[in-house]
Image (cartoon, rainbow over all chains, first blue to last red; front, top):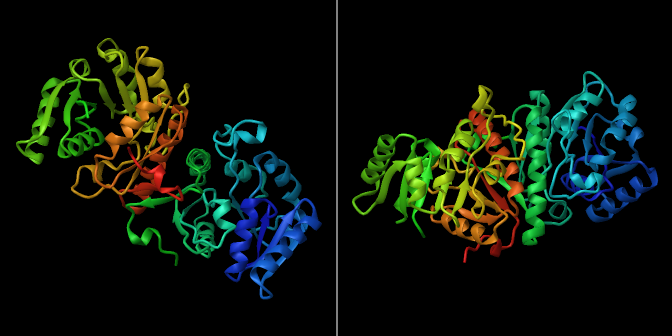
Length: 228
Length: 228
């Protein structure tokens, strides 16, 4: 895989994804507003994974300019501002993987509720804000940050939605680098709105039942889960 | 369990639920606009289950007047009209279990998309249309009609949402009468909107991958799945 940039890699979901990808041997750049915090997160991952770990930290814009597989794992209140900030640094042909969930908590509401996003979903907002020639893929909303940050197998399917079918396949391959994850093509980017909603449901289940929930899709033929 | 009325019991989802409950020994009344079609569906279930089957068919209003556990498994375009029609027949203390999904197909759109419902979800629309003292519970949106109508174990969790916690428990018990189903308390009725959206996602996965999909929730403690 090419180098993966995780924007929001100092937050729990982004850090967990970065940790898992570094652990599987991928090269990861942690992005943050603050380069020092990004480097600190990279050092932590280095300490957890060992001396073979290929991980570094950069300010968000510098991180984007250095690679073309960009993961957004940021709070929704930072979403549009970050995309506007990094837009000049996003290289043509890049893939932006959006795991952002527009939780009502972003505006002081509950983490079990979502905001209505004019474009339909956070991922569709992203599609409006990236430069032409950049593909947006929605994925990894439903993987528990707590589980990602543990050593446990991730008992969760990642549903991948994009209007660029080649990018969908790349992201399915990336998702399955995490032990336990199966990655399913979920169709067009517009379906991201449902993936985002599911996270709010899972957060509610976690609070109610004191768990770290995920989802599995049943009843599909084996080849729906096969990554070529 | 008390007698279960399945409104829309002549359609694939309602018929499948009725079949499964009759097979598990429950008493079911199939409701339909047309009493003759309701009786015909009941006869089919009788033939499938055998002479011990406790199933009959009635016109919707008559069916509601005869029992107080009412399941709505109807197309969204018939939802409000049916509720207005049966309102005088719904007995105080009844539980209305709503499995309706507001698919865009109801107004000529796609079955992979949903309509925005002013109240938030079809189930919340139901809550507005039932008489006072009637509890609304959202459940069973995500169980595949094809699987329900087969002999297979249903590889799907039913998430149950209601503002009446006693009704939630009753419906969890009812849901788990179907082999394979685990029933999880999903919190308040307002969360129904996410359950309804998930069905649109699953329909999209079924079309794309030629399956009969369902969902499982992972990562919760065992007691989240226990029905007392």
